[in-house]
Image (tube, rainbow, N blue to C red; front, side, top):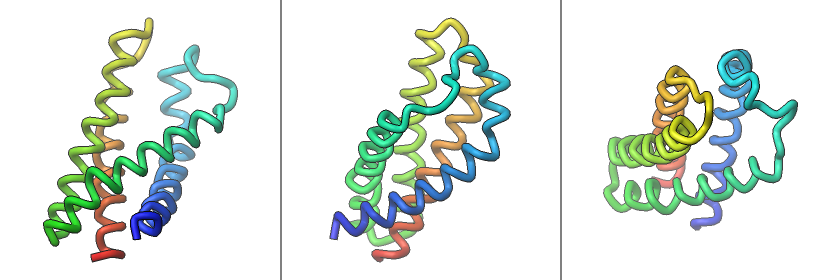
Length: 127
């Protein structure tokens, strides 16, 4: 069952994140010009997606299914998204020459909303 939950969460995550990345590519290019590679390294992207989606399933979806309520799914997912994306963005802001505060805010908001939404969607499929 966990494998199927992972597949559902992964499909939803990839779909929503692809739309976000495509629609926001100009924003990221404008603010991170010198830091961005000409094209993504899909090996690292795949590793991120596998690890992060497993985190959604184990640390947000499973507790939400045990709680048996959609607000739990949304809340656990949003919390995980906030903590995960905060780790990435705040570490970058602390260690890179130029990581704009606007990127921190926008990325944190996206990670929070995205992870909450994916957890909720997956919860709805399996509840």
